[in-house]
Image 1 (tube, rainbow, N blue to C red):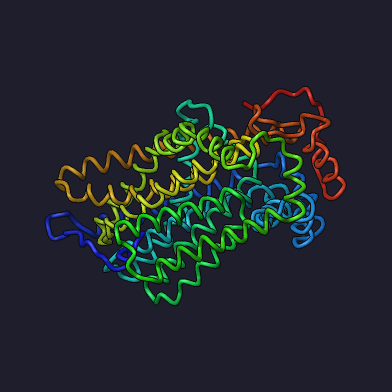
Image 2 (tube, rainbow, N blue to C red; image 1 turned 90 degrees about the vertical axis):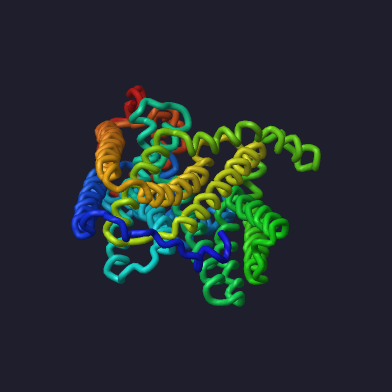
Length: 486
């Protein structure tokens, strides 16, 4: 992103024969109503979600209260306070106090809403010469539409029969709510704050560059991978700016410096917390911290880190995002709303770069800890934001083609988009229903992706036994020979 994001305007020519704008405005309202209906259907079925893995333990820790739970992790397990606070607030406390039908549904829906709000921030900066009523319409349709698109991005690969990390991430972010409470929400909060404070710095005054301290500090307390992603991204942005002289305002350069320094400082404090030091001692890693060892660890991240990034952008869900967003953008253009396509392209390039950095950082960090598919959650979020932004750009380009032909093309793309959404959400719904049925009567693991209480000596079962003492619970049989959910 650069300073021109907020001022450079590309006007879309609507003077040629483009049919009846009122007709397309009515169609966009039909799309909005359909999106809201589908979103509410997912909300309804999410009441069947049930906890797994760390969810049980966060509920136990939440019995100490919000501050007490975060303090317990700080002293004993993990110093990344904001990261842990997300799971305590959205997973642990609801699981301890709310009915089962709401406890796991809350973080699942909240995570999708958080992603939608970040995309909305990007969309909100693009429309130009748009009436207040049209902006309110964008606000109304954005949250359910982007949430549906996010779920399609996750589940379309499974609907198409893919396995591997695509399947693991989709299942994990659906059934393992601690991933939503920690990884998704913290990434969305930091990303949203960066967009907000950066735009304020550009629009108001360079004096607002100190606002970078807010996302910087929160990012530093959100995990080592978030900290390194911020620091490396800022370093690369500054290097690019100095080479190309694109960031001419001192406030912009100051913003990047303060963002990286505050994140690095907060990350250092988090790593020096008693819980982080204790956890580091318990993790077995042969990787050292000498310059030679760090260089070796960095070399081992390639080409796997590049494959991780490519997979995030080229799986079937990526096609779904591009189809949905470009089609919706085209219909919005026909109804009289205009977009700054160059701004959309810059946002797409920015998040594409951040996704690459996050992929490398994640692979590098795992050399000092352990491999887990959920560590790549932030890569998928950045890829989704890049694809959504590029979808807007594609929609604008499609609008420039012969209109009469595009009526047929866009109608076909809309039907295809609905089919992709329907197939993805049906697959997700079937998974939720199947696991719920097994969870009510006993262990409900999903292969080795989502662990439950199938191991009588494992920590999930130990936390489950403690949770039963604190709240009402179903009569789960405890038959540890029950098969996995497929």
